[in-house]
Image (cartoon, rainbow, N blue to C red; front, side):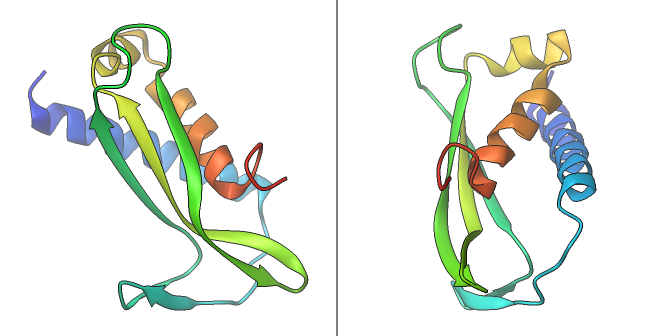
Length: 116
């Protein structure tokens, strides 16, 4: 699969994950953050890259919030990053598990296992 195929597959996986988490997190805190490279963020900005981590198997990906704010007394991530092991991407796509991995990593950006 060429890089355009990967991009399309990742876009679908990210939209699937976004839609899943939007069913869980149904309230909007009404806050727009504007401190991230001067761009407005409402509600979350996610960056993702593929790089060499540890080869096939092992760590498929990792993620973390990179910017947080306290809103109504609670810490909220408004930016984060995901890193995918480039050697695992073909297998994730072939097995149809990429969306599940993106959804899992998005949970870390939102704070599960990283902020609380």
